[in-house]
Image 1 (spheres, rainbow over the protein chains, first blue to last red):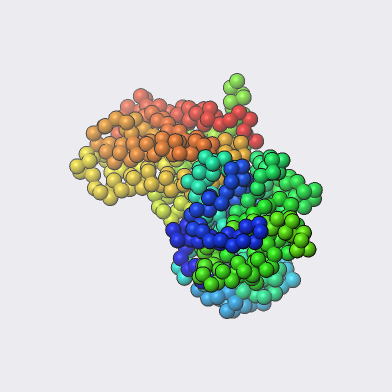
Image 2: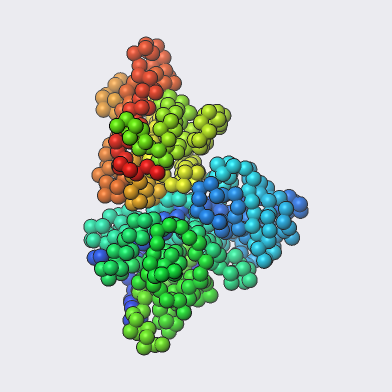
Length: 353
Length: 237
């Protein structure tokens, strides 16, 4: 696929590949996404705003320049911003492909990092020389001020212009907890939410701290997605119960929503309101207990996002979809085109099994 | 009844722009006193630090709503520190040229600055925070955007052109926001606090008889009452 290199959230010519529950493939203009929805559907999006999680600075013991990409946190609590997991790169910035970036100097517990006005200490290495747990000095409000002043959105070489926060906050962005944008939500604007309501479609949100999508290091990439804390509001849990009781479809806007809802329901098949930490991997053997369809970006087969799509459609269908995306020049990455995939229906799935 | 109303703002997450002087500072006092969780924004780091020192439970944020580049860093710190947002008070205001002059003598740049602070800034900040405000509304916490207006937004006072025209635009924008987002559960309210004994008023009318002006503390109580009235009962946590 072609990398989308312009940071436009809703380009007029954005396209949507549609896979229905029988594996049939169709193509649509993404701006007509609402036409795929039925009265009574429940649409759920991730309303996390994105942190300026890329911090350039210095590894104090060596004096070497580094870029720290915050990648995970223990909870969504506002004051819980001292400790993060993070991926550390050597000198350079997003203009170089992550796989070409130099390694950082050898990192050891206790090493100090100066990151703008922020100071952090490496607490431990997380079974990899570039994945660390770090702890910022200072009170939470000082850390927020430092991130606001010094941090930049994490970005990749396929977008040449430096991103600002307004490029990566979805229109519905609320609490800033994501490390990369929950970019499936770029498709939504306030007009579409109004039109859903007018058509009897319910809109609800969850909040999940979407982690980083790529590190450029094969060993680390195999560990993605990292654990992601999430919160499910009581009103969203209630809307899910209502939809289930009435046999309505539950449509996730983005892989992060699938991950949160399926994790929340992993105990007894019911989505409970409250917080949790999504630590599961979804793939071809995962049974989806909550989500009936997903609106997502277009993903390359070697990504963890693509693995999650295998819970919705079988490999033959996904291979045909991927071929169509390639042949028809769909655009990929966070500002690219989208796919809408209905979960294969149980009859087809059982027959295939 | 007073007690019940006083409780209604307990735990409510409120952001105030222009929070280090005049009405804004009085609102930081009043709303923290009523138990709200407050973040306030102002341009001068020393003033922000000073007000934060005397209000240890409020979060001080340095930023200028008139600058496009400051809006997201401000919004990040508001929702980051408060864990979301229930109430936004767009209070920061610019008079335009000081001393006040007739429109014919107003420099274009002075008009632009008044519009940037009084209209475009509140628009940008509100738009950036809509996701957090709508989440609050969906969760039943209540959600209010309160824009500080003026009688100069309605009446044509000579020499108040830059201020009056910008406040008129803000007032009308508030009404349109209200129409468009009522279904999302976000309330939009304009309040004219009246002529107050504030630094802004002193800049505009240096020789005013201060004894005739409303105390900002009084206006802050009225604004806080208006927010309470707009919040659902039992929303506070």
